[in-house]
Amino acid sequence: EIQKAGIIPPEMMPKNAEEALTISQTLPEPYFKSLKPKTLTDAINSISPGLSVYRKYSGETKSRALVVLFLSDLVKFFNVGKAMNDIQMAQTADLILEEFYYLNIEDFKLCFNMAKSGKFGKVYDRIDGQVIMDWLSTYLNMRIETVVSGNEQKHASIKIQEKNAKSILDINAEIHSK
Image 1 (cartoon, rainbow, N blue to C red):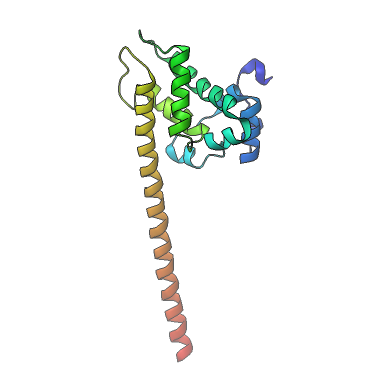
Image 2 (image 1 turned 90 degrees about the vertical axis):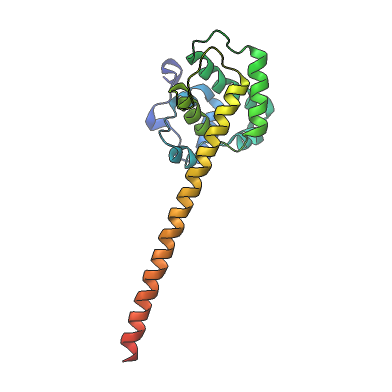
């Protein structure tokens, strides 16, 4: 059923990180196609394995093949005169494994969907490793900003809760001292 459709039905998608790793190892293409991150927060909170985890449990060759799968999906989308050949894809995959090993599979799906929809600018007549690495760097900066902003919001919320707790304790102490 999965092989026919090329995607994994929502009810069969993994429920935890261990299942996500297993499915991404056994059905990498359907798993990648089935991912639907809409926001940076979706990707940040994803249970999909990071490239470093994938490499640890799958090895270098399977990890490179996984990244080439991402790149192939991306390159096929664009209709450009100067597309990437197999050697360029392999070299770009190696660079990604080296420089972006901490990103997870949903990060790549979201980043490349953003590129496809023009969020990083127009693609004129070339798509190559340098363009892709620039997109990933831009995406990473956006991701970092999202994480920092989320942490600042959590911190502010905790401060408010602490202040409210102190107020309640003060009122309680005042009541009991009378």
